[in-house]
Image (cartoon, rainbow, N blue to C red; front, side, top):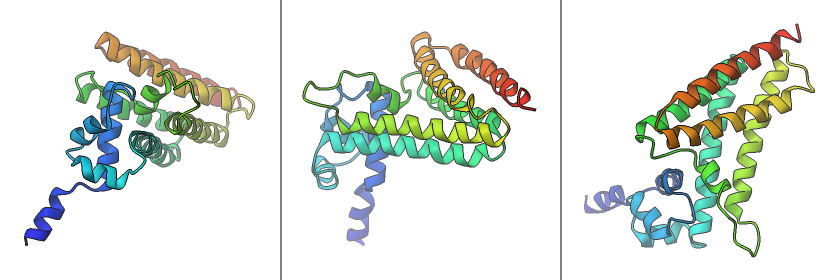
Length: 200
């Protein structure tokens, strides 16, 4: 009985990663220590180092991969219905995160991307952020093409969608208002409809 109680108090590896993603989305990576990441995930520092022996960069990289994969899963599911439905779901996730955190949290992938990398090379978390963005863009471009957008237009529009949403998230946090995301949503819907109608 005592053993299972102790096990229930030890957070899973995934919970630590999810907690780190949330903390990075709030404070960025450079301003956050592994001790703070562990505390935010309610994990003992020893457990954190056990799961992530390479330290903060390993945990940050997996946190970015976790966030990227979660959004990719959502997009794969929702884009089957069509690009507009996928983008609505993409927007809804970020709306929930920003509003639910009282404008304190945004996107951990973006947070890692905008920080200055160390002078001695590209950190793995930044590589993971680039891969996450590329993955989202690819899924959106494929859905646009599959639903009738011109093949040459789909990649650029997919990049515009991701860049617009990510930028709007940052603006919402700064302004403490969801208006930027609402305006971006309206414009993206129109652009998607135009891309699909233009191919008909």
